Amino acid sequence: MEDKAAVLKVLEESCGAFDFRKVSEALRCDREVVLAAVKRDGSALEWAGGDFCNDREVVLAAVSQDGSAVKFADKDLREDEEIVLEALKTYTHAMQFAGDLQSKKDVVLKAMRIEPTAFQHVCERLRQDREVALEAVRGNQEVLKWTFWPMRSDQEIILAGTKQNWNALKYASVDLRTDKDFLLLAARCTNDIFTLDRDLKGHSRQFREAFFSYVAVRNQTAPIVTVTLSHDFADDSDGSKASAAASNNSNNNSNSSN
View 1: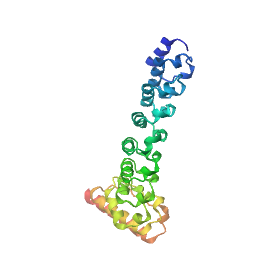
View 2: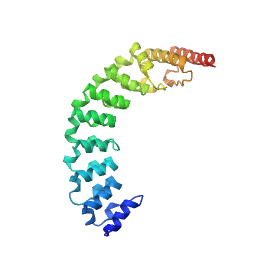
View 3: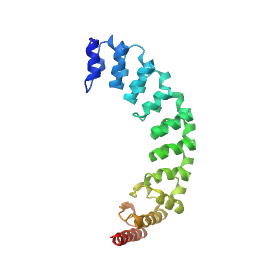
């Protein structure tokens, strides 16, 4: 395609896929055409001619449409705070290409509020920073799998994860997972009606006691609670009794609420 007016019309008015590689080399070096192309499809930046990967306006327009376009930006622009934070809105791995920004705490904290899983791409020093880790876990409990071991013994950090999903406990230290008082606290703080899964099977007695205490507490105000025990506990008589007690408690509370 060599007609500039026709290309601009297609880019600005039509919908659907558009292969920027089919545009003539001369037009791929035309700033007006390139800007229109990346606004429609950020990945078009990969095929732009000239030095547009170093053009801040073009790159910002590209990552605003498709954050993964940050991969095609010039190194200096991949370390531009505004560009990286904009890219994070649609591309979870934008921090992977952010160079020195990975070690700037103020930028990293902003990044955690946009895309918590970007935690995996920040420098080791900041992944060991409690404030950064807590901010990230508050946004997404799965971030716990990238934290260093000292963080996994931090009650506030683990509670930030279990508040979203009880199974975040699988990332906690053994000391916390076998601490009855902590387990009860975690159970009472969670917003999740959860399933007990196999990842926690190694902490049977104290865990089950906390789990069923939780069920009893929750059923006083929310009778409908789904409880699924791992089959690994099926042959444990104490666990079976506890399961039966929880089931009876649930039924009794359900009847009293009707």
